[in-house]
Length: 539
Image (cartoon, rainbow, N blue to C red):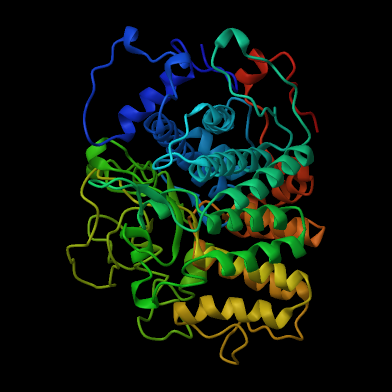
């Protein structure tokens, strides 16, 4: 029997779920766990180590949302298209004909993350305080991280479904599961904002962990990328406020980021832009990322989805669209590796996308998304050159929840809507300068904007730049909806989707997407069956 939104197969308590998650999360040892060994709730949270165990289990809930985040954030938009291996569910999304049976309408991974976060918020006060390991500051940090994770999951649910069931209580017994009706998305977003305000107060600039040999804690730059810091909270605040057209608050969140982050608006160098997706010890641009470890049997699903190398487990289900390719490299398959006026040399071919397996350097071959396959840039060539590619099945690519390049453009979006066009152009130019392409207001830029440009003209350039900078990172569909909400009309979204789709679908898409209700997914048919208070949307 499939699960409803909170229905999980707990053995005796929610601790069993955390315990199972930790078996995957830990790379230190393999434990043989028998059913009678499951920790009872009353025996849990007796020390700092239990709290740490709980925290790690909560973060493990992020890995299952990476695939739906990517698929739902990209396939409905214009930057990707279905590949030859796309399944029925992906085709439905790309064609905007999603049925309630579609597997990507299954919201279980999001509610699982919410349940883990709810349990933390409710139960962390039970952990005995210890001046060296778990004092009041540490408890507040952990609580802030949990509130962020809960806010992130609900924000995704609202952006994908609109109104959804809402609870701030964890469920540790299947007999106690309730079946709430959907709550208004505005009410949920109010709660998201409240959680993030608390998370901002509670979280620190960097993450501290136990010393290996000495008592006390030490700052960990690595954990500061894998866990929530105050700067990460600012980024989600900015995006939530922009979603709700609260431009002044979005600007404030970006300003707060500048004040609190150790590397305020520090971008990776243009020549090393690809390092953002391949190197796990970058300490400036990455803000918060989901990590995968092959040796711990953790697999990023995006290699399977984007690779066309069957020998590496690739199914080529999703490919870069012609729109994306021609935006990076307008005359593709003819490109220049030096003419930055014409081509996006550092972010285009060989970085965001590449040619076909096994060598990936042939221009004009079946293109693939490179961010989750490659370990370095690919140089175009007419001869086969062994590529710097991930070994077969070693799908350890990072998933960026937020990085600084993303936040620059969110800041530009807020400034533009507040009438600060010069400030918005400055933010765009920092991204374009790093990319080595003409600045937004340069006379050599074919999409030039100035302070005399209209708000929508600048916004359209921001949208274009977000595609170039954050293409294939699960953001595009939500960017399109957000811009349509800013502009109070659906044209920017409709035109983008039509540009990617075949002409035969244009009339259907124009009619369908003019109704904003169809920007959201239907409720899953199994959820409808299990929850008597959940009624299918009727438009």
